[in-house]
Image (tube, rainbow over all chains, first blue to last red; front, side, top):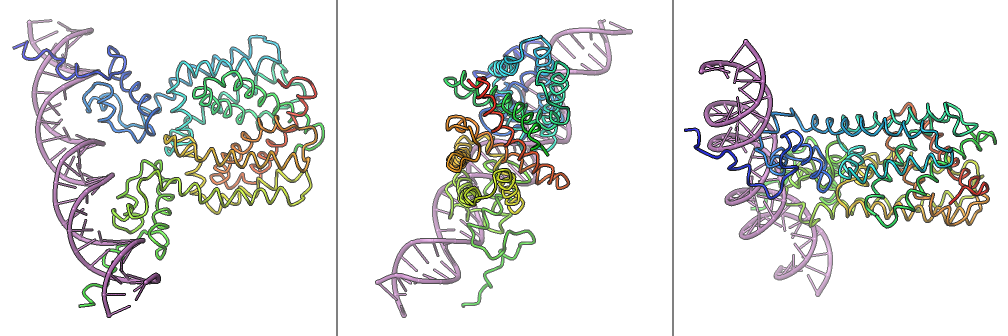
Length: 219
Length: 219
DNA sequence: CTCCAATGTAGACGACTGTATACGCGAGCG
DNA sequence: CGCTCGCGTATACAGTCGTCTACATTGGAG
């Protein structure tokens, strides 16, 4: 009576599966990233669809998440908590001023290369239809922006810049880098150029703000 | 025999309808904008859903569009062809240099206020999952950016700037303004501030690029 | 007046969906 | 040992979906 069925009857209907030996939760997250990256918004996925791609029964989803929203937030947390501290470390590493922005951009772009789906989905959902998810991502962006502002003031990387100017500029900068990761992923041939341009963008914005202030054209 | 049914039997099951007397095509476009703005991606809508909101039979959709993609592209064309020429007209209106960016931003933001759904959906789909639609919107953005570059060179609005610098900066500028329209719509209390900040952004970027070039820190 | 093309409607089909209910198994703890 | 609990499965139901086929109305061109 203990050998009625080898237990992997449906499990072995794989051929398309996400990290075969991971727990169901990780498999579902992986499947969600893969599907959302190449098809539609995270919250427009179906639990059956997810189960199928993860090689699991549809109902297994509910063992781990109450709703798709919950799964989505779990994904955001995972990557944000990984990336933010690394960026701060770069800024505090004592690199020469002129290469700091470039180095940061390079790091983010390379990180994106290692987690492409996360960025594709992340940027998508930042502008997506779930207000909840959108706010979660924006909060992470703002956190990174705030840390960046703080560090720039501390190491006096951009002479002449003030706290209120940074408060205005930091978030657009972080958003810009975030957005550019997608071009970086999609156009491998332009990667060097994209790093250069994105660093230009940051430097020009900061330098220009200081210059405008000196010309009394700020405010 | 000519009065069997007043012909509006199902038509009058409205209570929620889009411009009651417009043709089916316009009603469907309106319904698509409204639904996509507050719920999910344009291409994730259902033709039945659209028909319902437009007060039409589900099948009527196919009388006007082959696919949702086709409807989406029609929407993009409609607004892009309206907005682009107006922006060009502002730049060529001979306004003083320092107020030009602000004036342009004001115009776009006000236009967004008159067509909120179009911008909510537009920004969403720019980062959405339909590569086709994404490309269509990007093409329009690039067109506006190219026209802007051309005009700036022609009226010598930013002394010291060159064509290749503009080629690099114009697109991020247009994208930034496009993105900011959403904040403008969502946060009525910050509207004046958002106009100011967005104009700052443009001016700082241009000014900064010229400054970096002079410092030999460009390239 | 007739005919046609454009537009809208009606009904039906099979496929797929979310989720409720119930069952199976194995690890860990008493 | 026995029991529970976390995880995965099986089945079933009612609802929604896209789309096919067939029909109705209407405005204008001939």
